[in-house]
Length: 473
Image (cartoon, rainbow, N blue to C red; front, side):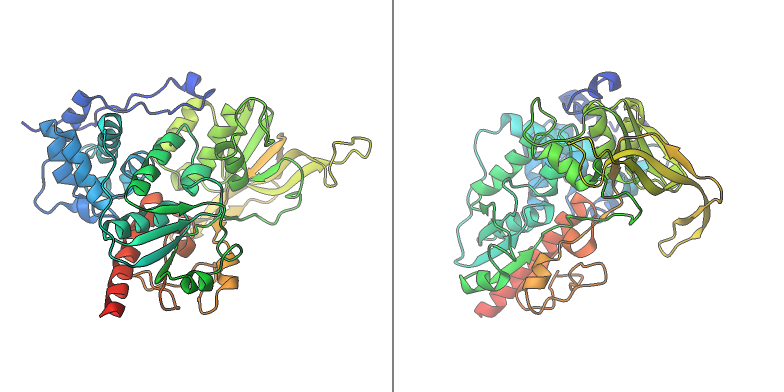
């Protein structure tokens, strides 16, 4: 019998006052009985709108049906048909705006917890599987993938299944892209990412780290060495700043730098080799998921007070509802309708530690009101005269978006980019303006979601397969 409860089975979590001081995963995952009970909430719709709303088109009702039967391994294999990173997507994909937003159970209650069930199935498989994925037979063709983030890994996985010899080139010393440098351990444990990457290696994917395409090797050199197509999934790692006075002060970070120091370089550990803020009062400027990650990481690094400073209201806040709720529970303070105008600091010539531009002492802001909608439909933030005030902080983290790194476009002839620096591609294939070169994910769109980047990688993999087979005929 279907479970007609209007609410999801609750997700067990760490106590907020405990988790705010550790980097262990916040959500603890469903038990087998809770997963089966939640899967019973699916009505197995004939139209399956959830599948159409999934960027990688996972056969959602099919894997939920296997959970209802208690056949968790078959459920996992159904997900793996479409997704190379099920344990990752079950944790960080914004299902509430994608597959779950189209679930008919959401009309008169909460939708089925599709993301929670994907996570459960992937974790069950990882805990019980004793054999790695099989290596598909090779078809004699080679493809290079630039970047080991979600789009690159998705593209590489699909091409490997089709028999291609795939090499993924990663600029950093660890594979995973934004999954390892951008998303904190308490949301996405790095062991989970490493396991997903090992599954790809077992399928024959080669991952070459410490290789900066455009510097160590160029796209032209990749073609010259025998690769028949190149997919660029290099992400959007270039941080944006506001251009206000004081951004060069010591104690000002981009969210990218701050999270990379903590997540990838282990600055949260005792006696780290990479310095990072410890304690103090922190302002995070921005309202997206990255801002939530930075604010919650600062708490775990011992901050006495963490503010999220956002120029619009809570209703316009773009971060996932779950992440905002978790941040509030952990003690983050939200200062909305508030926009920074200057970062204040001091310079002490007698202090030998004092760098040229001094240290942060405060964040000067102006209060705002909401005006008319902008080009994207969001109401504009309008400064209110004579409302200047100072927030007492000694660390400021800028989380106002990122742009694609310009290195590849400046070292590769024939690649068209848009005004934001993203590669211009054919929408359904990811083909760039240069033959044989495809791109997807944040390198095209700017910072977006993990699952949308994976969808772009899958589209490009299909197009690359068709392109190479077409040339071989």
